[in-house]
Length: 384
Image (cartoon, rainbow, N blue to C red; front, top):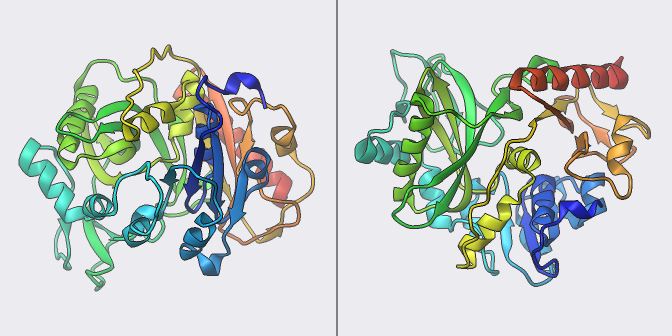
């Protein structure tokens, strides 16, 4: 790969990555100058090119991650999505953990608890939540163990099990996500960047509230929205989250309404790394190694976006396509146009993710247009 992709860190350090998909985190590990070792559900072709990877069969996930861990070389462990839904599995990781502990993960994944804390202690406005049917108002019915927006649907008065689902007030606005760095003490969590989310995007064959990608958002100028993100970081400090983590929110005018806390590396972080050519994991690793890395100067670059194309129908992944350039030896991983690339001959079921498309532009609107153009061209190529 292009040598400019690496930082000056010690490349002999191995970071173990566990989760449903680890490709994005693996490239972040490389940016920090370390070596990734991965176990996930896909073991995609581009991940195999840059890392040792163990594919976990669907019927053995997620417990099979712990079996794979036994064969991993020495090194700290990072978990990716959606292991925040499995704090009992995180508790069984017998390696140094570059991530938040299971008891904290369990707490910030309990909607009634974290929303009450933010509202009570710092006056952060949060959507109302309920664990019983509601006769008035507009609500979403959400799984407690959620991932990628799957299973979320408008609440129409149907009964539900409060042990598996909850209601969250529907807030009109635009979906965003933010990247925070938590020092793990009573100090504010630093907002490093925000991105617009692509949710249920038709031109990606996504449905409902399905997460379909992100577009990095230009650093907010001083104003109500920037101040709201800053205030949210102050409120989040009470949870003592450590390292990089994400918050999904609805933005309406100058208001930021947090809807979910993801206490781990998130899918949008690689966009910020591409834009600024800086290794965010240097900051993350420094928190857990008690060797804090200095904040670096980040002059703005082009805006990057990523879009996940979902299968319009069941098909066999072909041998040739525009993604082949992203698999070439020596390619700069900060410039690849495709990622999460399946293996030739793999059967991909209707509605399942096919691959990730990247684009860059000088504005959010132009970046979205480029992503849409590339996705539609690929859709026609794959399914006519």
